[in-house]
Length: 198
Image (cartoon, helix red, strand yellow):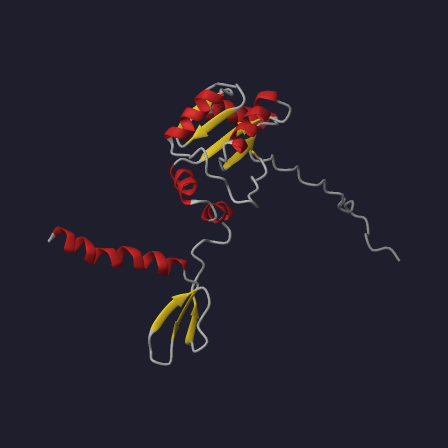
């Protein structure tokens, strides 16, 4: 009985996976409703479905292209590298993550504002690089510790990223300061003077 009930649930679990990937819904001439990437030739009442992945969410879109094992790890334990520009251990950390096929985002610590935000986020530490794997934070580059943290999070060692994969550019840790407003170059006319001269 238990096996029978599991078999009954299987289509319910599989169907949403196919429907979620569909971009179109249509009916054919017999009234059968179908979902797919492209409507069939005999499609009637074609309805374009909303994108499953919001166009504004580039990170989620990029994750959808990853092999399942890497995607699962990246969703459950996203990796963030905190690094400086002219920092040999930071370069070594970047190279390590790339050679390990880890999709990561990078937050740059390049300005005074970035440094303040970094120290606050790291509990007073200023050691670069820092690696965040899910909620775990590792300070300084240590390939053994980084490898262990990634393995614990489920990042596979031997599954490559897609050939056209590119890591996103580093973004500043602190938002850039607001620029000063431009000076007001208009001078009000002096009292009693006639601004309209002919």
